[in-house]
Image (cartoon, rainbow, N blue to C red):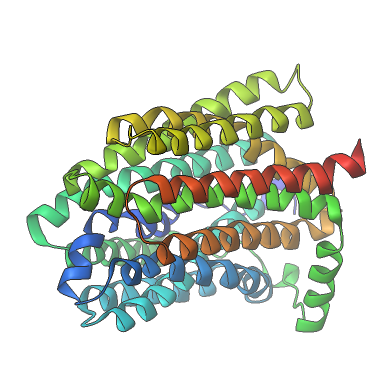
Length: 397
């Protein structure tokens, strides 16, 4: 599309759309212990509300992207937003854990539409430096929102109870739905839409999963991120139930993770002109493994306190800032431009799928300290390193 006729989309709205879906992932974490008590279920069962969201999100993005290519961006986005809002209300009204988990699945499908389609809208409306700036804004929303949301959720839990977090999420969904109706035009003209049938899409995904280097990069990202998801799933039980941290303070500990990740991203971007991509990933894997092993060692030594967690978490997160952007870029560089969208969706599926698996494992464990969460995190980043070595390094040199 020629730049002179390229449609426009207001960046504040796109950022708000991204924030709405990200808030839903973590805002309710400080309420997990209370939810278990009020719903008459176990901590493991309420931790499944995290796993359900990640699993549904992982699968949905494989479908939503092609739908937006076939029907345009605006209609699928609005359907997703309405679903997200209604599902958030259903979460708040859930009388038992089964209804809550089911509502979280639909909330994830609706929230996924915002993530996938906003990225497609950026592709429709910008190019070159403008696209880079737009993705940077969205990247900040993706990195900061899941960390800040528990700070808000903790205050809501103390003041109003666990349902308040889902009601606020529903209100946010309703607000961005109205803003989208009023302020977002269709960015994919009918002439540029393409319908991909299920068979053709399956063939594309089949080709991608048979590209070992692409798979290696994607799994390196996925398992590195799975360690963070394991931390999110286990932190409320370990910190609030076992260590006595106040619900409103939980977000402060979670906030340390993206802060170090952003710092790692900054250093990695600075070094990228001097150091090769594989070297950067090697450094990052060394840091993530060192940080998580330190977490396990401190727990075994009896130094399992909220304060002692900050240093190993920061080391892990700083290393993630090296691994994730370099591996993401490496994976997309392995595929031709025509398959970049499918590759991004499949990579996102791997990332959310690995997080789904790690949270399931955490939920199945009986937590006696932070040892169990640290062990899952250490195993996750070790698998990420093994995927990088066996599938990428050995095939590319």
